[in-house]
Length: 203
Image 1 (tube, one colour):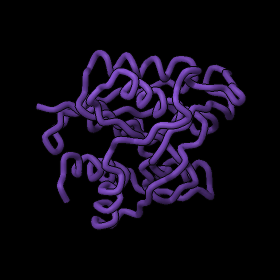
Image 2: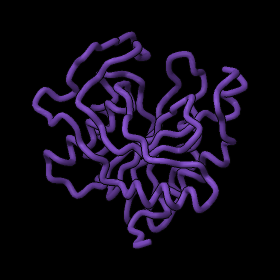
Image 3: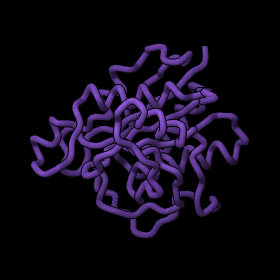
Image 4: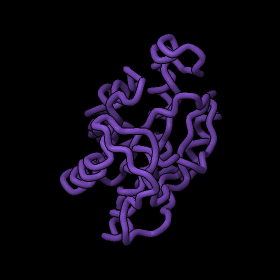
């Protein structure tokens, strides 16, 4: 059976809940569209998160890798098109706050996702989930791990299909924060399952 490595993040900044954690925990070990899901949680640490993901890619040797991230404020599920070679932003969970730093000094300026992101968006919309392709994963941890994975895939000539999907806040998070667009947990989880359902699809 083919293997899908699915990662989420721990809570970060002022978000005491990260819906990606619950989603990946619930999908861990399931078979979806011919893929055995192996789920892991990454730390919100600029220095360690990329290393953690690269070790997982080495150890698990998945056919496909998808990282999930919270984009509180977005109201659609947004597969990311590109990761850029920059880390910059608010402090991570251990206080690192890089400014205009390269993720990989010898890396390319950017790498495109190799996930079927257009098929994902089309299928999400078909099933009633608002979605669009995002052209910026930011410069925080989400972009950081997306870039690290794609740099690894490109430099090792790996056949792993890799990319990143941002999801909106859950209702639980919106209640805590007030004016934040939100989805139910079940809709968030089912939107991720929908994205997995188009892997290898000719639709």
